[in-house]
Every structure is written in structure tokens, then in C-alpha cells.
Amino acid sequence: MIKQTPQLGIEALTDAAECLRILAHPHRLQIVQLLLTGSNYSVNDISEACELTQPTTSDHLRLMQRCGFLKNIRDGRTVYYSIAETHLQDIMQCIQSRFG
Image (cartoon, rainbow, N blue to C red; front, top):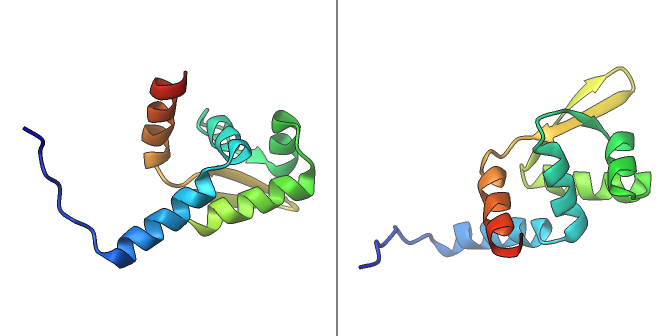
């Protein structure tokens, strides 16, 4: 027997769909994988590790931060990013189980 979970309203489902749409990009998933290592990374660190340009990396980070997936800490002129949404670990484990 399948356990039923409470139904979400359309507003919550709309918000979830928007955040999942933003996450559903190979470079963004690559960034999440990197940040899940537990370290804080600068835009330049992420750009280099993911082989992306700095402007492209900044765009991806901005979108993911807007959804609440990421947080940042400023140290002088450098901004370091880390994971804010702890459920990203679960999502990445599901992806790894299915596609790994």
C-alpha cells in the first residue's frame, strides 16, 4: 500500500515547479555537486571548476540564489557561495541513484 502524503496547493506547486525548472540545467547541477563538497567557493573558483565563463557562472548562481538554493558570504570584494537548501543533497542522491 502506498502511503499518501498531504496534497500541496497550486501556489506551492507553482513555486516548486519554478525552482525545479531553475535547477534542471546541467551546469547548475554541476555547481550544486561542487558546492555540496562543503566548501565555500568564489565565482572564479566555480567558473574554473565547471569550465564556464564568469558571467555565465554569475547568472547561474543568481538564479539559484533567487530560489533559495544558495547563500553567499562577502569577504572584501570576493563573494563565496555555499548551499542554503539542505534538501539539495537528497535531490542529488536521487539523481546519482538514477543516472550514476
